Image (cartoon, rainbow, N blue to C red; front, top):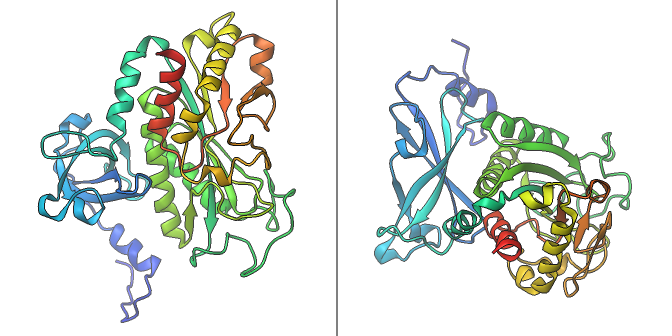
Length: 362
């Protein structure tokens, strides 16, 4: 056994932690991390349960509960909220047969609580199952120092050089936080998330990863779990991550969650007409979509920094200043997908994906 030094210091030592995590785990004991959306509708919570065997599906896992009065999801006089497992992922933090379990929240009678948007979203996808909706979501995020005020790589109390060298940049003077982006990428791959790429973004300290293509409810499930994994990775590095759509005011890009979308009709030969028809439907309900596309989005959608103004709807080929961008590839092929650039980085992927299908298909 490796030599250990124990001190009275409150400092958390990674080598000491690694020793305990390296202890053999009994073959008949699995750690299941139950994860759920918290009371703000944006935060994520979790706690761990020991189970006796590797489950083959969420149905093999027990329904659990938590104190909803401590998360803003129930009153103190009737505080029990139930956790219903809906999706299993491999645990990239504990490894082995351990798992992370995405859960829906209901009251004791089985009714979805206010922050459980998954059930409503699932009902929409079930109605539109024949449309085969695919989504590719581009999740932007901003890294902050432990103080929660200074973006990673920025001088404390000051500003870096202007935007320009940071987007897809390389080098210590432009790519701030690559270790975190790479660690998250590998952790998501291990967990079974369909993460398809990463890149440094326009504002220094800001990055993006992409999840998809995923069909229907699978998109929301994977994006929420990818956010949880990001929170845990940042926790390990001692930094903070923000999904605020405009974390730094001024001449700096905001953070979005661009949503690439197609249906079976759009992907088939001659699908161009279906692409345009869907976009026109979005334009007719622009304000309905803006209302559910994330909090604080008015600070981001100003008509500057690669955005369309929040009050106007527009679309165009290869136009990153439009509400909806049609890729050159889609135009050339006469079929494909489009990118809704309006969703904020803190959007609820269940709500946004379901709203797209509801507007364009139902």
